[in-house]
Amino acid sequence: MISTIAAYALGIAGVGCLYGSWKDRLAAQLRPTLLGWLLLIGSGYLAIQASGAEFGTTVIFTAPALVAWLLVAVNLELRQSKVRKRKVAEPTEQVETDGTRSLSRHLLLFVMTVPVSAAAAVFVSVALARALPFSYLSHIAFAVLFMPFVWGCAAYWVIADSKPARPAITIIVLGLIGVATAGLK
Image 1 (cartoon, rainbow, N blue to C red):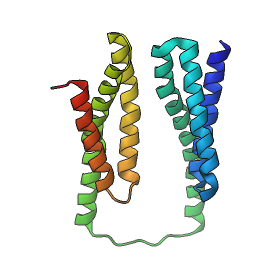
Image 2: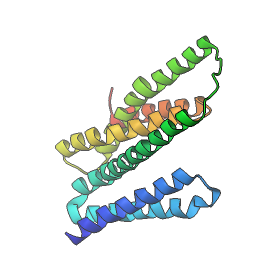
Image 3: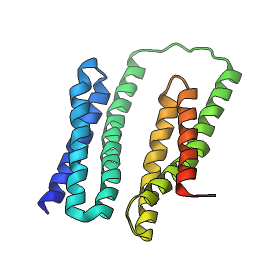
């Protein structure tokens, strides 16, 4: 029981450190980032010790994602109120853009974030689940729980990266590796 509580506490603290270092984006944020990853590793170790390999591994991959979503949702509410205040206080300029170029870029982003990232996430999740020493039912549960996390990370990377070729090539290669190692034919 104490190991389970400690695992969740370390996981929350680890995600908090990573979120804080990401939010500030300072060059001196290496220490909180490293501390966050070490806390998450410690959380994973304690979760496996407390709940066994199957449930502990599932907790390792799902709990930090849920805590991160909570932190992002809190930040979204704060940011929206700041944006509303700014809109009232200061008018912004309209920027003219080329509609065709914008449409093709957004179409490419859509294709990379929805079908390509989703397919790669499925293949990588199934390959990882099959590599773990679980029962068949646990393989299915792990893949179902892990796939949205991988898909979200891949989609975020596609949208956030200034060079769209970098995440596109990496995601496609990881998807192909997932197909090869999962034995899906």
